[in-house]
Length: 252
Image (tube, rainbow, N blue to C red):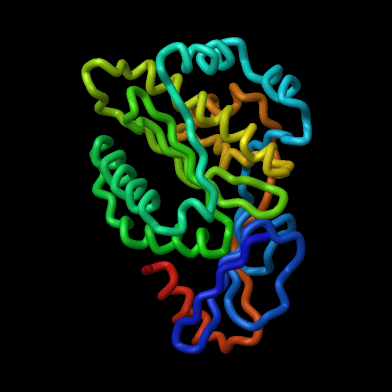
């Protein structure tokens, strides 16, 4: 479980990942991918895919589709290299800031104005300080083309952000960036397996039309569907304070 608590005007606002049972402390708890259904009115089911990292490397790779494994194997032949960084290696904040810059450009390339850059750096720094952050990069010709960002506890590594370079250098084809993205997923899975994590969580597998292609991409790695819950729970806080603090949190 990951637990990050912030205090706003005397009220504890806790972000809790992968909880198996409710927390007991006073305040507002925002549960993400909890195993139980929080009591709040805004609780929603969250559909995701997980890959079992307790299997052997051979068993994990055998679940990749033929097309997926071809692209994964092709990546190194195209000069793709991957590197993983844990919280200790991220402590100076440099790679977190570099990712935030990359993520901003990623959204701009899609025609979206990204206004959460400062908040992104702040939240990733909090995860890093809690020992719950990992970042993976895939490079071509020594230039990073793909970032994957993960939150993790003692059992699970969960994909939080994935961003690829859309406007590549003329000598780096977009297809190679696609190979790099798949290769980084494979390398990340083996990295977390080596760390002793049991679950690789793909960070969502929605059925909505707008994310269908992303879900198909994730399914090509052979994960299994799981249903968890996202929602808020309140304990020991007056109702008017709850509404105020909840609105404050959503405006951050």
